[in-house]
Amino acid sequence: MNRRPGFLTYGLLAAFVLGSTFPLYWSFLSGSRTQAEMSGSNPPLLPGGHFLDNASRVLDTVPFWKAMGNSLLVSSVTATSVVFFCTLTGFAFAKFSFRGRTPLLVFVIATMAVPTQLGVVPLFILMAQLGWAGTTWSVMVPWLVTAFGVFFMRQYLVDAVPDELVEASRMDGCSTFRTFLSVGLPAARPAAAILWLFTFMQVWTDFFWPLIALNSDNPTIQIALNQLQSGYFKDYSLVLAGTTLASIPLLVLFAFTGRQFVSGIMQGAVKG
Image (cartoon, rainbow, N blue to C red; front, side):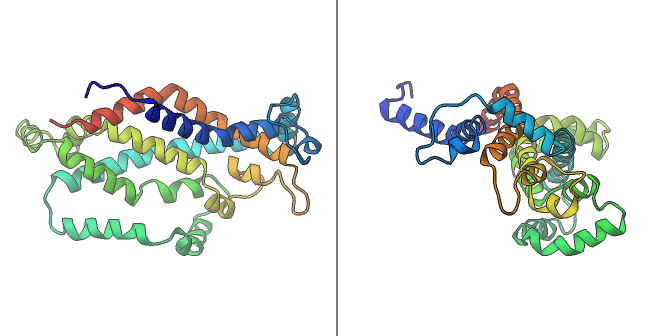
């Protein structure tokens, strides 16, 4: 257990790191060059000096800041809602006995097998009838709770919360919701942190539903990036400069919360 990792382990880790960071580096590399430089037979491997110019063109071409704000709003609200409601539902499935608990949980899990594309048409009709088509409500409300989040939190809380704590809170006169706030939610923090991060990234990178629900005047960041390319000509320097700018919030998020999320994973992995 005290043996230090060998050369093979460090070599594999270095290969994974390089493979993971190379697409981001290539985006920055392409965004810092002109289209003529990138269209050559031997693309350069070092960044150029045109990134700020390309970034300025991105800001002039699409409503980038509005799209960035929409994505931050939608991703943050959706991730927070998913964590709260999925933790609440998972706690009920994990620690409370009620009629139909198992069939209902099976039904929730079975909904994950239904492709999202099958519900696009009725969902868009519903959003239009509510008057939300073209607004950020249409990309937030349908995903405020997810079946995967419910299943994930239920599996974690089964072992993370001892039944004795739930019984003790009941003997102290706590209501069901108070028991969740005082016992279930603190115990679920490691898993909730991971679920929040994954949900935030999923919503941030979502392209299919925002493309249908939103218009070009009120886009998310992925829709704005799509507007950078035309049907007959693609300026890859412009597109990849925008892609690099759109990746900055995720990099900042990982830079400030990476240690907390890793410690949460390790804490959730230790039982007893």
